[in-house]
Amino acid sequence: MSAAAPTSRPYPGLRLLLFLAAVALGWNVDGYRLLDPDEGRNAEVAREMAHTNDYLVPHLDGLPYLDKPIVYFAAAAALMELLGPTETAARLPAYAATLATIGLLVGFARRRWGPDAGWLAGIAYATTLLPLVYARTAIFDSTLTLCTTAAILWLFEERPVLAWAAMAAGALTKGPVAIALPLLVIIPHALATGAPVRRLISWRAVGAFALIALPWFIAVSIRIPAFPSYVVVRETLQRVATGTFHRTAPFWYYVPIVPVAAFPWIVPALARTRSWRAQRARAAAARQLDHRAARLLHAQPVQAAAVRAAADAGVRARRRAQPGDTPRRRCGREPG
Image (cartoon, rainbow, N blue to C red; front, side):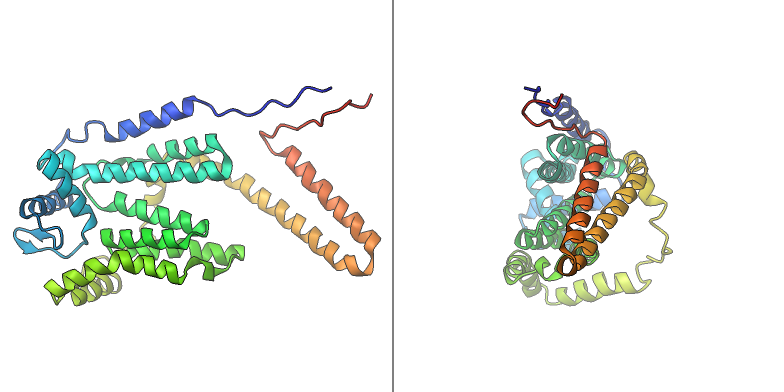
């Protein structure tokens, strides 16, 4: 009897590395003053919310502040009631949201590619430049990233109710951008892969979104009747379609930003593009063989069987050629 192929075991050091990276993200989070203007403004809104105990309408200097929704302010205000009006309380929601995003990525990668891939995904995100900065800053982006990441992953896994619930939470964090970003990612993916777009939404998903997002919107609109016009016209349409907010950067604005924000993991990602394109070419060739076999099936069964056998042999050869794969031996006596 031949020896059994060794089984792959998760590398235990990856868990420790992820734990250390997560701790480093929050290390000395209160070691420097709040940065103006964004951190100071957001922390002050949270402080006034905690002081007045009004968790419905944010206020700044005693006046309603409706530029952003409620979620981050409410989270920071609740922490200020426990820890006092400190830098730690103002920044902890961003840090917690980053940890939750790491957990989402770890779980998704583990389900698709195994334990080691999950830990590596978490390490990569925790040590990427932009998440590292945002995790320690009292702004909305880490919480928005959590919501949009959850929505994208759950839409990919065809769990639309959870996905639209995440988009609702994102809309209560930073507005309609939390709806646009996941759809701009997943709809082109569905069209490119042939997945049915209708599976991205359902009546239950719409109900979940409405149940989470509408109560706060309606309650604020009752107290401040001008709120719907302000948020839809000024904060959304004018911000996107006009130069009122001086957002007139050129179309290539993010081109130099993305490589820096994704450093250092963009380097191995770009290095893998060549092998990824080669894999796609091999997959396209296999599909072409399948189509030829289907056309021959009715007219010439013998030739079709030969084409199918050749395609299967090609698939097996490609699997054996993939790096990191260990060929499995069948139990039994090996031929002499």
